[in-house]
Image (cartoon, rainbow, N blue to C red; front, side):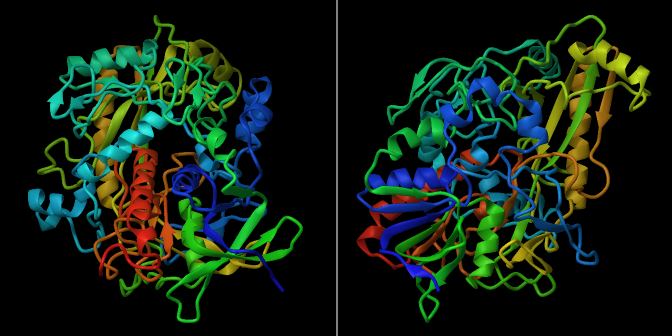
Length: 589
């Protein structure tokens, strides 16, 4: 029998970026907030010391920072005709664990979605017609506009101390920035990172072809910086251990380096770690969340009452907990009915390797978002007429650091092992670079999340089942991006280029991105969405669901900037409107 605890004003389930943002905002409003995190406490000086943070075996290959799949995993299949099997080893995406979540090991790539990304269905229907948006494609408009989110994009960028160059200031295009971005009200808080040789070569080649290169916006500080909360970040050392690693230098923005030093001092905030939420509890009529039930690391069960429940875990965990709690109608891909689990999406990537004889590129120098990109082929920045696809992605060189165990590109015809392979690695390691493409994924009727009928976790609960594959739209779009990357690669010179097109069905084995989205999407009506524009559940008004769970489809950008902007947008609505009339909908259905 669960032990019942004293009630709190708000309980947060999961404590990564969105949980930290919401906790900071709600405690500032005077609320008593409890966050429940199923992983460990993680702190920069004790857990991410530079003395051992740059350990490739410990952190990437042995998954120190990632979810332990022996305790909880999910099952995977490409389509309904297949039997889903458990993911036994992390590959395509790297689920975080512990305080800070995946925001601990992210790269720090901070993007704003394009204005047209937020109106994907209406925009593409108007410009290209019904043939480009078939019934099988279940994309929807966001219920918010770029202008709605712009102040919150700005707030997150200044929280993180993002290093970059504005391309559109109040509608005026700025030299050196991204001319395709939506208008921003002010410059980035920090100047761009220092650009190394390979991305510089890419920028020169792209410009020679009439493209518009610019430095990648990075939550890796280019100089010492104090954010609006008074928390200090140090300048990046270009150590090459951002991606998949924590930062021990206080240079990469995370919950630990931007919010927690302030939040953890507040008497109105409590954090419980190593505690797994089993379900969200509901009133007898199912219209009010009364709190949560969780189990601690000793196996003891507790009931935590709360006036407001905020689901702030990773997208896959958010959807699973809604399904386990019986909140919302599960999506049925056969009938198209139901909402929870609908519109799961991901991203599609490809690359082009460039091999030189006469240029030393030193690829081990790196930072999480250090590079030069072009957005000429992202979203609807280019004319899709006659291309038979919608959407796009960015193209560029992102020099994150060529870590020696993980990185060993070889030219065409080189064996995959043996003496010749070793000689090729020794010859080309410092003379090779890779152009990457990063494309969006539209939502399709057959891509969704539900509970697996067979497999269970260590606590006896059904695992989440993922049914996903790329559609023809995504393959055509990715091939187009890869062709554009190859054109720039040729303009860079070099003795050889090797284009790595995305072929065949989606495969969970190789790493791609940790950019899973959808499953409890936001929208204009409960008929087509789980939450309103403030991430408030249509069915349970005192339940808010944060994160990329809300995305109706995935744009060609990394999601974190938009995830944070939506969290701030929701927090403002809670403070300004909801707290004046608790348990009431902020948008009338």
